[in-house]
Length: 422
Length: 185
Image (cartoon, rainbow over all chains, first blue to last red; front, side, top):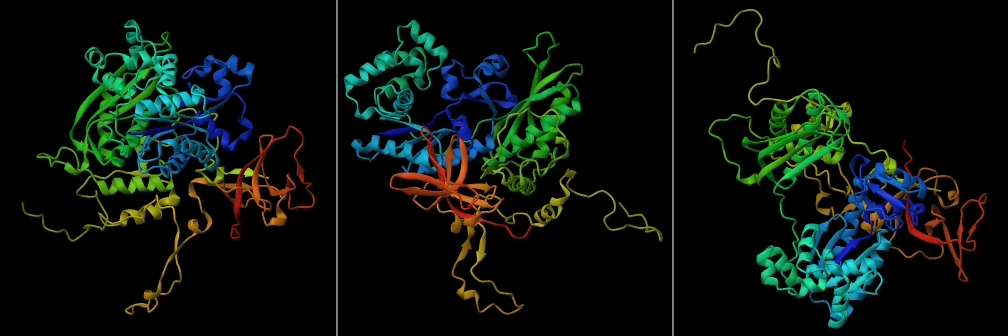
């Protein structure tokens, strides 16, 4: 088997640079919701030692000193650029697994082994020219190896610039390379596991590859056992071309400002339910249970703290925004306590099942779902923009909504935001 | 239960009272969307509502008025549907829309506010109108490649050609393939 993993370099920052070439060569970060944390860094920012997830408010001095430019996340732009990139990549293989917004696996079986690196080069050139985004390509006999090869390509660890094909390297070369890479670079090996492995003398990729898979499997998990096998070139993970339907759907946000009243929380929870319910219907599911939670700001211990969630089953599974909203607001009323500065609310839809196998109810406690009405709402919102049709409980002004003070224009998604050139 | 006898006065008015059957919900929406939403709601259950994700705009090759009762003799001759996207966008994933500003390309028919269809997948050749990047700035100009020298030419005598200075770098961002001018405001 042969797999390629293609991954965008500093994807969000690169998207901003396509439409603002003046950003090239400059220290640029993209911030998470509410302009909270750094979620993407240009190479120049990485060189300054700024870590992923660093809180922006702690970086203000550094930013001033080095002229770091910060952007709010422009999700509409990144999603459009991601779709373009994925469609270009799709033309290279009949098998594609889109793994995240900026990376995908391609099945490379049946291609002549000697040409894979050249195909990788072509992919890099085409994505750069067509979409404007720099990508790296890693090629290996398993998904885990392809991912590791991608890491090597990105860091220039295997020589070649931007493309790394483990299949072209001799065993001795791979040995030496794997001995130099820390084990935490392996797909699925997180910080905790890294510490535990270190205690057993497993520090490098090579250590892990050559460890006893079965006993590691017994000590830790089958997943780790599979990882060891994959590092040895035995493919255990297949391409998942269809994303599996989500088991639960979460919609939660920190507020742009503190919220004190039940009515504002109700608006927020209604809005989150509307978004979650739309996702629910997109995967043709209905939810059988629901969780609502609210909390104050845990990073302000001097403020009175309150944090509570409530999970409960619905009388009948539903995919109807009205039913789900009614249930969530019922739960919220039970959670709410006045006198606190709330900073975040969220909802989670659980016990998801196929919308097709809806059971009838013996006692109709709630009005039945109206899929046709929901379809109208979803289509109207898709065509004329989110929130075009909504329940009045979402509120109109939404003063609690998240801050995005530094967001770039919708270059590819809004007519009025098109890039101007003279 | 027996119905009360009808009174001579008063009586029911159409549309009065609470709607029966299923409970309803008041929804707020912008006034401009009311007709569109009403037409969507009027669609019978299970009816096909126009797909908002559809990107192509279909126009029949030639139209005809429908005369009641008689099938149009032209029906058998409709061969194709014209799709403006298909006509203007050859490489969808590499095509971006930009907006022209200023008058430097007026001689090429590009006016302030025009929509530029830009294809990044094309190799820029001598004579193409391109989006170029110089010193981090985007500009739309005609590309001149002569004897290994590259210049960007404005289509307006008021603007001098842009010659690359030492140390300056020029990147081609994309090739302009169409200019769209809306004439009805």
